[in-house]
Amino acid sequence: MHVSPTVAAIAEPATLLMARRSRELRAQGRDIIDLSLGEPDHDPPAFALDAAHEALRGPWHKYPPVNGYLDVRQAIANKFERDNGLRYTADQIVVSTGAKQALMNVVMSLIGPGDEVVIPAPFWVSYSEQVKLAGGTPVIVHSTLEEDWKAPIERIAAAVNERTRLIMFSSPCNPSGSVLSGEELEALAEVVRRYPNLYVVADEIYEHIVFDGAHRSFAALPGMAERTITVNGLSKAFALTGWRLGFIGAPLWIAQAATKVQGQFTSGTNTIAQRVAKACMEADPAQLGAMRVDFLRRRDLVIAALKKIPGWRCNVPQGAFYLLPDVRSCIDGKTIKGSVDLSLYLLDTVGVSLVEGQSFGAEGTLRISYATSDDKLSEAMARVAKGVAQLKGA
Image (cartoon, rainbow, N blue to C red):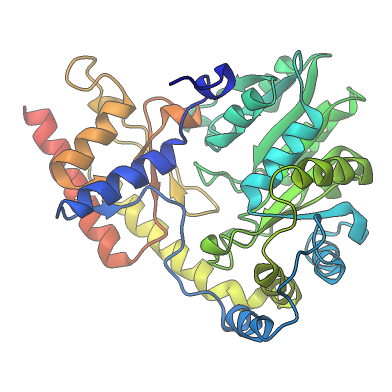
């Protein structure tokens, strides 16, 4: 029994690990509230399901082009222009089996041994492991709660050198919900302009879940369209996690490289999902407003509950559907040695599944997904408070 050194060196995603443990405990009859996955509990929009039903009638049952149907890619390009002020041709769009594959395609296309990738922390768990799979070196730039979980641009700039090939970030951010301001995006662009061989992966899959102001795309800044790969998908705003469809808009040569990579892994993305994607891209984003209202209410509900837990501290994020409280007051170095121990303690003791912050580059935190019902969130927070009280009273 021997796996390759490359596979042995990477970790199982912490989010999927906790979700798996939750399912195992449920199978044993345990009452588990799972706040580990970023999966909206809303139904998909009616127009998405209507498109799926229509597509089933055909003729969408044969192999599609590797990079996606032309009309789907054109619909995505039109969406980028309408919503983000970005002008791509259809050939600059690649449709993939989820945004995760889209990210992996790009990393495999651009990163090799000796290349460095700067990743501001906290970051989505797969960024660093994807870089390792490609043979590159992740360079993590940390931040704190007091900094709103946003690494200062000067700290990011200090991590960039001639070996840096990529900067990868999400805004709104998974796991913190933080949103980069226009001034912060421009300051980052100024860093990129200093290095002609430096590119940016802007993960914008939460673009429609911003609570204050409007989303801004990094690629829309002067000179950044040629230096940016914009990643998006259907999972979050359209509640279509199981349909597994993501996409990129990128400089043509990068889109061509990503298509080449994808051609050796999965080939073209599910045909019915592509027809659904076309409908989603053509829909008015205003139809997604009700979901955003729900998430804002749930954010405030959980923040109010967190404030009642002694020692736990939290900021007020402006997007996505995550909170990343600082829980170091529960880490004693003995019973609870770190955030991994704390997440397992809460799962085993009170039946609430949260993701440890270490895998996000933020040790001493737990990620809470509030993409579920108000009732479940209220019960989960009551259980967490009880678990913390038991822990501190032990």
